[in-house]
Image (cartoon, rainbow, N blue to C red; front, side, top):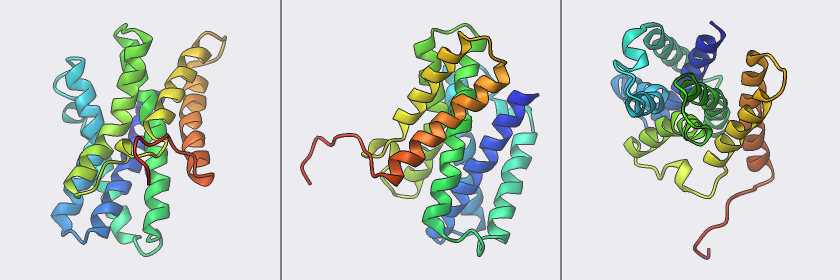
Length: 201
């Protein structure tokens, strides 16, 4: 139950980030809904296809679709209050990658995959919805820029496996690992920490 709650919260957060991008691009209602949808379930869909889990999660459990619709309505109705678009987008996107990283890692663990593959699945789950969103919105995906994004997911995944070696409740492992991703991303943006570029500015 806790696992599903985490995934639903991640879906909700990512859907809002998708809505904010679509609103910034001045899309119509249909466009906003599509961007919210692909942002929130794109990474999970790629993950499920890679591990052979079909039909993919959101197709067999309508609660994810309802969460996306609710998040879309919420973001549109309250857009004036969360209309500090850059700040709000960053916040919800960061929450989304933190939650989705541990969801993806756990999916890999559940079917007995190697920890490195599990961490890769967590990173894919967290990042690929945003990649699809940015491509559809004609933006260079954040993951391909200098920002600390996928790196935070990888560190969160490593934290997950380190904590599993300790006598800690699995729910606590989830919370701490997801929080590590969020904190790293926040710190990186706050102090302008980025990966080295191959090109000179």
